[in-house]
Structures are given as C-alpha cells and as structure tokens.
Picture 1 (tube, rainbow, N blue to C red):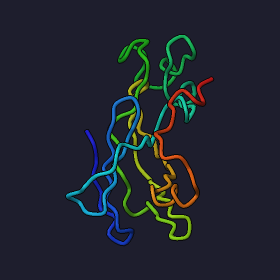
Picture 2: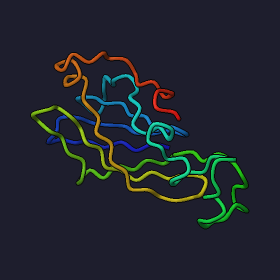
Picture 3: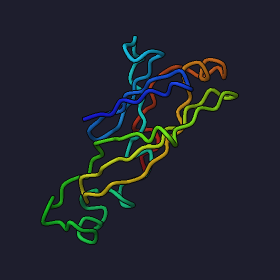
Length: 142
C-alpha cells in the first residue's frame, strides 16, 4: 500500500510505497510522467535493526515491545504503509531538496514511526554534479 501527495506550492507530486524498503516516485503533475524509483527508507542504511526493527539473532526487541514475539515470532522486521504529512513536508528552494515527513509502520515489532527523509531532487543532484544512480542498499551495512 502506498500514499500519494500533491505538494502544490512545491510544484511536485510524490508517491511513496514499499515493503521492506520504502521508495518514492516524483512528477511535476499528478498524472506524470513519473520519475524512476528513489529509495526513501532502507532499514540497513538508516540503522533501524536493533533500534526499532527486529533482526533475528541480532536483538531481542521483538520480545520487549508489544505485541510480543507471539505475534510475529522471530521474523525479520520490515517497513510498510508510508503515509506522508503534507503539512510538515518542506521544499528548500535554495538547495532544491525535498524533506519528506511521513509515518511508517514496522512489522516486528508492530509500531508506527514518525520519519523524515531529505531527498535531493534530480535537479539539485545534477546541479551538484552528483551521479544519478540509485543508492546502493548494501553501502552502509555493518
């Protein structure tokens, strides 16, 4: 399940969805054309495991936070159900960065997290000379 939002003052629409990772697509108009997927949340990159998501054999968070391990067992936690806060999402005209504020559900343990991700727009990445490649989900994995 995903969530679509129109940021009229920011001249952009955004669709966020996922299971495990959360991804977004952006468009100048609600009907598109839509950008390629951009990773918004990756539990390894954001170091969610052991802090607010369970990794089997690494932590016992699934037994300490209700609903207990009886609900999900020892299964790996995943993210899903993103819902954006249009009111708290901002766009920096100077840097062309979009700061997304959203709710995100986690499976093990079941919780709802309030999140913020700053996503450089394609325009801002080009102006900085960044390579326009998707982020490597294994890059910051320890």
